[in-house]
Length: 148
Picture 1 (cartoon, helix red, strand yellow):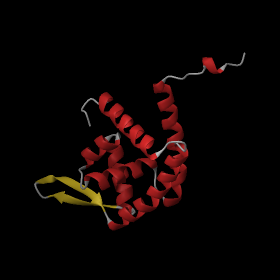
Picture 2: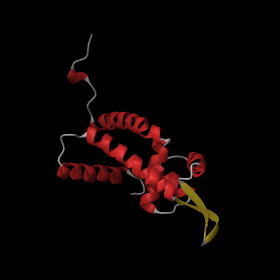
Picture 3: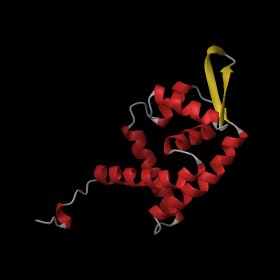
Picture 4: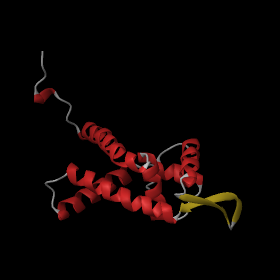
C-alpha cells in the first residue's frame, strides 16, 4: 500500500539528515573536477578561516579521526595545497597551512559551492539566508559538547 505524505518522515532531524546526504552528493559532484573531495574542501576552508593548525586540531574541526585527517593532509600536501612546518613553540607539533595553490583551488571551488547553495534555497532573500545561517550556527553550538 503506497504511503501518503502524512506518513513520510518529516521531523527536523530527519530533514537535516536528508539535506546533509543530498548536499554532500552535490558538493562531491561539483568539487570532483577540481580534484577535491568534500572532506578536503572542508579542511581547506578550516585552514583559510583559522590559519595554521595541527593535525589534531584539523581532525577536531573537520569531524574526522586523526588518522583520516593525516591521510587527507598527505594527499593535499602532495597536490601542493597545504604545507607543514614545525611549530616554533613546540618541537613535536607540526603546523599545517594553506599555500598559494591552496588558496587558488579554494577560489575556484568556492564558486561551485555558492552555486550549490543557491540551488538549495532559491526562494530565500539575502536577509532570510543570513537568518538561516545564524539559526544553523546556533543549532550546531547548542548540540556541540564543547561549544565550538
